[in-house]
Amino acid sequence: MEAFKRVFLIVVDSFGIGAMDDAAAYGDEGANTFLHIDERMDPFRIPNLMRLGLGELAQPVHACRNAPLTGYRCALKERSVGKDTTTGHWEMMGLRTEKPFVTFTNTGFPQALIDELERRTGHEVIGNKAASGTEILTELAGQELASGSRKMIVYTSADSVLQICGHEKSMGLDELYRVCQIARDITMKPEWKVGRVIARPYLGDAKSGFERTPNRKDLSVDPPRKTVLDLLKDNGKAVVAIGKIHDIFNGRGITRSVHSDSSVEGMEQTIAMADEAWEGLVFTNLVDFDAKWGHRRNPSGYGRELEAFDGKLGELMDAMQETDLLIVTADHGNDPTHTGTDHTREKAPLLLWSPRFQSTGTLKTQSSFGTVGMTILANFGIEREPYMIGDSVLEALR
Image: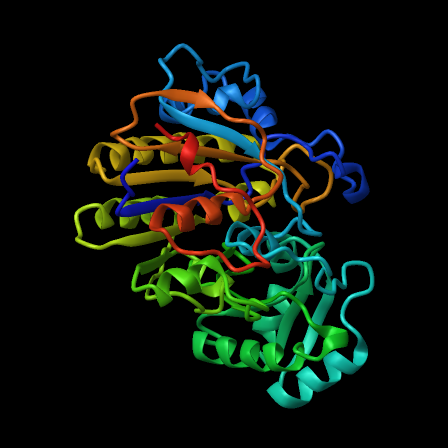
């Protein structure tokens, strides 16, 4: 088959399709983001995802499976240790994470780290515990405002993250980003090395309530080796990052970055790329599924977001050319009916479609998220690095 000139890769952040074999070790036995959302949505209108074969990878109750199938699909297992954004995306692009990043879920951050953060930023830390992003604002935002933002909220989760909240009017975005950069520098020490430092700006007051804004900023560590993105860029291909992709890879291998304020906007930006002339990869992350609905344990909100995404997905498919390939997948699960508020260790869907496909089929389950990146490299005739994981399914696409 002639190579595709353009690949649209969309990550529906946290859209798992069932617990991994080792899910019990993560406390996630029985998790299934897709099916547990489907149980709460009646009716559940996601016709484009269903005709791409999502329903063949699970057994939904309310999402209709009557439409003729198109494209190819399979389930992906994760080989990396972890269930977070960084490990999931890095594995898609060929890297297996064998040693997990440090977490501070049960203890909060060490006093020595907090002392250095306070000394270097000039702010007093409050919080320093694992919490949901909305709950920590309810508890502590009033204290930050009352202090004139001399105090700042620091918290973590079950993932390897250090998150800092700052009121956009009281602290200001520039100051929030400054203190987060300091936190990133501090947490590069091996004993404190977290995967991401995240700036969590918000607005509001105690009377009207507090709400996070879209001006989030993630400060990640560099991938330890070259990824598929680096190889694409080195070979003269466009690598357009939409959403938080730039942050996840710390800018490595990216030729153009586009900020998104929402998942709907991210899809609109992706659709707009169909009208531009380029050759390579558009890599889109749709974070609202995870941040707004999964972590907040809102299956109905997640379901409605999926319905909105499905409509935009149809628009993108209508705009695609014969030489385009669409890939839809996920980076981990976040079952909104599961205990706690954190990610769940789940398989990811892999849906592949092009206007020129003449056949359809369900492929065998793949042993790594790296199948995504290896398929992209194979399409462009680029040799993989020896350490990269995953098997291409390009030859199965007809």
